[in-house]
Image (cartoon, rainbow, N blue to C red):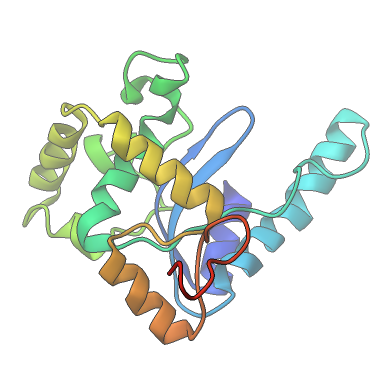
Length: 195
């Protein structure tokens, strides 16, 4: 956690939510510059991997491959992502309530516990004029069932690198980047007459 905080400060990444699971991690982050997230995760890996290898007498990498990331339409999906991330231990059957899990941002975002790793996202801060109101509204979001279709949409976008948002949002991202983003149709391209 300390290395994550150091890296976030060093590379200009604002961390809004996180969960550390036994076999994976989710982090909701806003980078300040292009490449900030990559540099943050490289920073953590260059410290954490040697530490674990030394601590447990092992060698080699800990992760199977490159991290997965997805841009999100914050107006529509930010609070969905908070819930997706902080409910991960509940969905995994590790705890009955997110407040029971110690390696998550839930206690800070919903209960007001101090967590210096976190930076409040402007949309989270807009939930209320004071911390108590924001936390109460945040807890209320967790009382509402996170629909399976939303879970599937978040997972699919994360796994394919597709921006999480509507078609207009994706088109805007593609226009800025001047390239297609995310998952495209598999198989042979359609013939002009078929299109």
